[in-house]
Length: 335
Image (cartoon, rainbow, N blue to C red; front, side):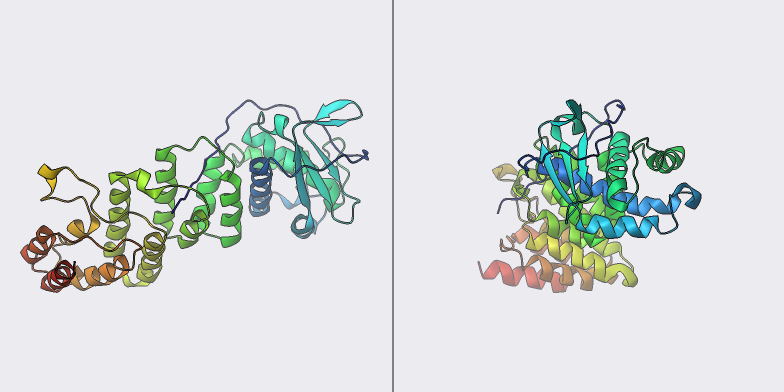
């Protein structure tokens, strides 16, 4: 089963943004550039969250935030390689008077903007759609300035994603998934880091949404086993109040095909297989032994049946976990 995820991190210098409102003869709308449009959506979603940090007097009206949320829900996005308004190249063009408001994004300009500049552009382009002509940035600038003073715009896209994972909001996470689906510079350490953030937040929707992306979990090799073991350790250490959510996160990873079985095929090392079953057998705390059985029951529902070795049984017995040893022995006998 293929899974993939892509990450886009930008830190380029801030560039001035050209005002891109007006009436232009509409050309053919392009729905390419899904990565740029997804980032636009992610930032618009994040703006709604951080509006709470803005001095209310900076908004053009008391109901601005509510109007922004309502209008953003119906706005459409499109992308073209380059956009021109009155003969000059611009970052974006908005059409607030269409039955369904539209914002077009210039792909060539978007990729050159810093994260802070992208926030500025998103807010500026949304202003006419919300109902405010922002030709001199008279409405967007006070809001952006307020956010910048608090350091809320000095972020990378990765930091925005991590912050949304901590919140674990399903709607936001959908935008996060789409935001990176078109990127082609994924790095293994970035993938692991994102899943680690999800693990820390016990955020199961992250695993679910990422299942729609093409990424081979087997490419994690032993690192994948190590990650699964960290998730299992998190379950083992959990208090009763958080246990259900942590179990659900583990269950989703197993169902999505994260590796659990032996991946070390070197004959000399066959006595110490690199598998979560061998590691699970090493749990010494007898109070946690019943929980190891619950974890095994989840692992047993993987697409790949557990590969149990005699050393796994012996290890469980050494740790006085007779119940797990018996379960392992039964699985070993049924091979």
